[in-house]
Image 1 (cartoon, each protein chain N blue to C red):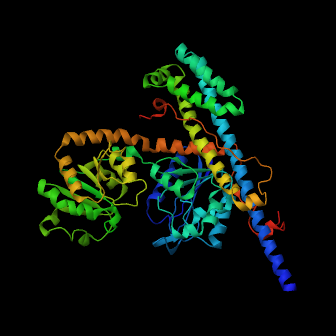
Image 2 (spheres, each protein chain N blue to C red; image 1 turned 90 degrees about the vertical axis):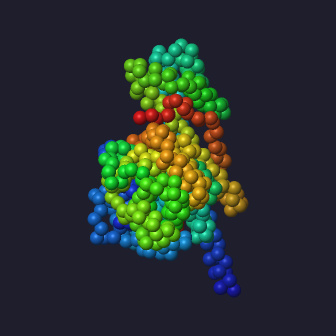
Image 3 (cartoon, rainbow over the protein chains, first blue to last red; image 1 turned 180 degrees about the vertical axis):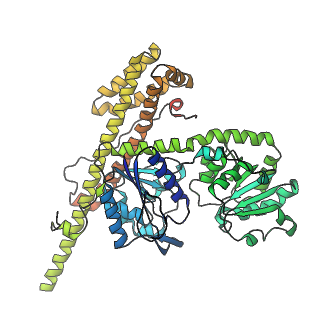
Length: 387
Length: 180
């Protein structure tokens, strides 16, 4: 099958959506499909052979932060050319509501279009204003995928219609077979995420840490992620700061080894999560998980059966649960076993097959993707367009 | 006077273009519904065929075979008005026959059973997908058709008002459950 995938965010900036698309594309290529990914990228970034650059993304203030987006005539022309040259059987657009490549591709294409909605952001003000235009473009999508039941609910509420739920994929064996590192073992709590992003919840964990250390003085907290380390520990009493180790950004291999080594993975995120891929990675590596009870997390953890949940932003509850788990190896072993069995449904072999089912369902009884020339402008409308 | 006339003309042309664009949108939605309906029919037919094949293969016990055969046969023969009911009954029959994991294990162990089980699992997984995509398209078309501009100017022409396909498509849990 010839598959075209549209990535809305810069290929050179690491992010969940980009990784998902990379893994998905490589999975299908391994199965012998032809895959082309259209993504914004600087012209001098080295790209894998299956990625086509749609030009540099421009930083624009959008939706409360600065987003790097692609739009304008040049990008639209590149999208058109890519569609024309690719002659795809199906195109798969990620995040079609972001005013970037996804929307442009939706606008320019006709034929079987599959779209994945990753975020569960409430509708932004810009989107309400652009609703009429957006609706006309989104109507072309033949199949919608939401990454979680939570994301699906947001989608149904804000855009109407329906979607199938297919979770994000993880290479479970990559994590399950990683080699633990001795220096990260022995009474360790792990945290991975941006240090200076409050929504990732490190401040909540820092508030809980004194209580955890009071009950179990041998505990160490290992933090992997970018950000200001001084600021992160500022709220801790001086003598406790040595119990926190910062590892900075770590590679994928180290991430797997990290998750294999720790005794407890804590995800204190306070919001803005629509899936929680890191929890799946932690469970794949056999790390017991303690997470805040966000909708998305509760779903990934099977309502608390595959990992423990604590009330969001409640540092005392977090401390109490962490102390209890660290003192109870039997419970941790149970969580490990349940987690490892539970994550099989997130493995790429399952997720990829489901996505392929969606492609095959929409391509059955439909023509291939083409550039949509029916409504390109006044000339076509008035019958003046050349054929 | 001429200026007014020109303005009226411009406004009329603009309205005309907008209506023509809307009609184009509607046409595209109807085409999408047709494609989605064709895909749904294909998946339903495939599910019924696999079920019937299993029922006649002698892998299942006689009682289960009869239940499955009856339901699959009825689903394939159903008139358009009874289709939703017949397909729902096939879903119920499949759930009853493959209620426990033992039955599924038994099927997998039989010669050629592994492939049949995989095919059936794929079919029961795809029916709800195809149905959701179809009803999503129907919903989008209905929302647009209920709009004043579409009703007043009869932009939908003679196309029938699209209907959702409602059925019980819950797959048998033992069959789709994936334990690696």
